Length: 454
Ligand SMILES: *[C@@H]1O[C@H](CO)[C@@H](O)[C@H](O)[C@H]1NC(C)=O
Ligand SMILES: *[C@@H]1O[C@H](CO)[C@@H](O)[C@H](O)[C@H]1NC(C)=O
Ligand SMILES: *[C@@H]1O[C@H](CO)[C@@H](O)[C@H](O)[C@H]1NC(C)=O
Ligand SMILES: *[C@@H]1O[C@H](CO)[C@@H](O)[C@H](O)[C@H]1NC(C)=O
Ligand SMILES: *[C@@H]1O[C@H](CO)[C@@H](O)[C@H](O)[C@H]1NC(C)=O
Ligand SMILES: *[C@@H]1O[C@H](CO)[C@@H](O)[C@H](O)[C@H]1NC(C)=O
Ligand SMILES: *[C@@H]1O[C@H](CO)[C@@H](O)[C@H](O)[C@H]1NC(C)=O
Ligand SMILES: *[C@@H]1O[C@H](CO)[C@@H](O)[C@H](O)[C@H]1NC(C)=O
Image 1 (tube, rainbow, N blue to C red):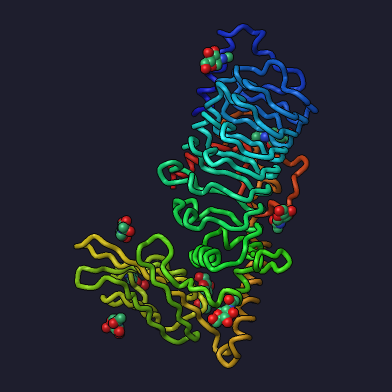
Image 2 (cartoon, rainbow, N blue to C red):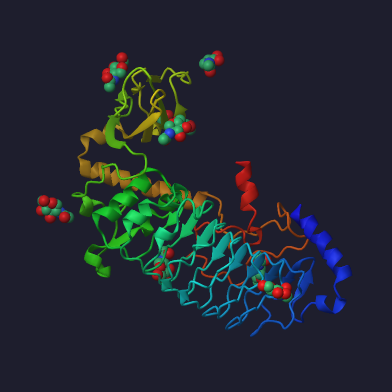
């Protein structure tokens, strides 16, 4: 739709604007509303960039800097790709007159800091890619005015502090992904992190930093892990911390929790006011009862369970002889199978008082043979199974990252008849990016439509 509008506008512009202004700069390729000057050995911006351009690709050049008003004439610009250049700072007013930018890619440059003025006025910016720079510092109000942000990529920098407090529900209602992995964060302000919108917490990437092992750090990740967030699950082994901050004593803290045995993580520290946690172990084939003991009781309280393998369970939805739910909320599994392992979440809703309470129960189903083993063996086996599952996951799931996938050029791109092939040239360190969920680089901004559907 927008595509046709653009094309229509473009044709209109062609008629209205003197033709000389629309000349495609040498070294660039212009098609429809897209101008590509990538991999052209540019050391400075082309003198006159066409004003009709909605997408401008300047990636893989040698641009050392951008001047103020660099894109002044390009008032229709929405996608600006500047990856793989040599840019180290941005001057004031660099994005003057281009407040319509939705996607900005400055990855693989030489930026050393993110200063307050850098993205000022880009209030429509949805995706900001700054990974693989040399950023050590992010000024606290940099992201403040960027209320349309959906995804921010900051991995592979040298960030030691991040202004988590500047991200809140009302300031960034659409933000769903914040990638701070592979930086130099040592201690996080956990109160601020806990206060992040839950959508951001769900997709907050913090692995491969230099975190110092302590209980508040551990309990935060422990809870995220328990909730099965992909940002944790996909990078279990990369979640490391240093004992007393000494890099030589780095441990994979989600694998090896011995150091944290003294920590009281089983406390309610996350949002729903009252989360109680407990765990039960049951042998395969035995029956087990999970009680939904919350602060709520009485006849007006109704219960629902969210189970790992059966989804939502209510008393009326049950049509299964293997599982039972009582009016007091207790859930009974008649003959546990390995599939019944996982985190069960019970929500008790007092309809009269309009209050909810939740309880989480972690169920571990043991193979009969395991019981005779001592717990050491059980843990070992558990580790092995998890490792196997992770390996399976790594090798069997189709690769999602744009660096290894050749996107079908025109499929679901509502934008252009001419679409660049995804960055197959000089893939920056494919290993490093193996699972971080970059969108197809040509599809920035479509997330809105995608979210609306779901
Ligand atoms: C840039 O914006 C200023 C106002 O901020 C306007 O006066 C000027 O004409 C714009 N320049 C172009 C080339 O559109
Ligand atoms: C971890 O971060 C360092 C830089 O801080 C990077 O060189 C390395 O590739 C990263 N490792 C992984 C597994 O992401
Ligand atoms: C755990 O607590 C015990 C007793 O309070 C103490 O001896 C031990 O050093 C603590 N362990 C850690 C890792 O802090
Ligand atoms: C329960 O299961 C039986 C047989 O499996 C089926 O005939 C019946 O429609 C189901 N009832 C509900 C409410 O799903
Ligand atoms: C709930 O009811 C079931 C069946 O009546 C009973 O076995 C169970 O003990 C009750 N749960 C609690 C927590 O009282
Ligand atoms: C676990 O679930 C899978 C798929 O739903 C099923 O094929 C398998 O038989 C189940 N295993 C057990 C032990 O119930
Ligand atoms: C209580 O639960 C209901 C239904 O599960 C949900 O719609 C509502 O948002 C919950 N309220 C709170 C405060 O969590
Ligand atoms: C920009 O050009 C580079 C190099 O040719 C290419 O890899 C990349 O996919 C292009 N970006 C877009 C968004 O088309």
